[in-house]
Image (cartoon, rainbow, N blue to C red; front, side, top):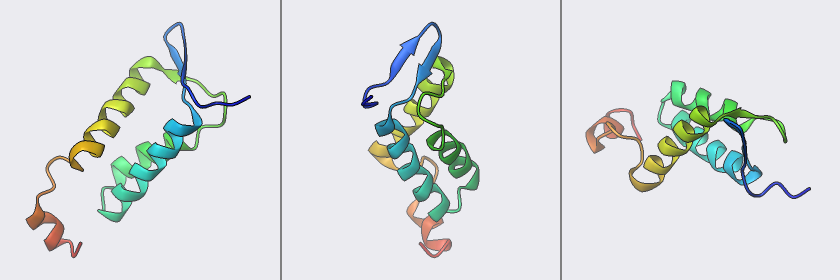
Length: 87
C-alpha cells in the first residue's frame, strides 16, 4: 500500500510517509538550533509506524507548526540569537 496521502477517520489521522519525512526534516533543523523540545516533538511524530493514528488536533497542530517553519523558520529566533549560538 502506498501511503502518500494522509487518511482521516472520525477524529483521527494516519500521517502519510511524506508527512513523517517532512517532520523529520524539521526535527533535524530544530536539534541543530538547540530547540530540543521542538526536535523531540517532531522526531517522535516522524517515528510513528506506518498505519499508526494520531488525533486530528495533534495532526493539525504539527502541520501548522511545520508550515510556519517552512515559511519563516522558527519564530522568535532572531539573527542575533542564532549568531550568539554560533550558528
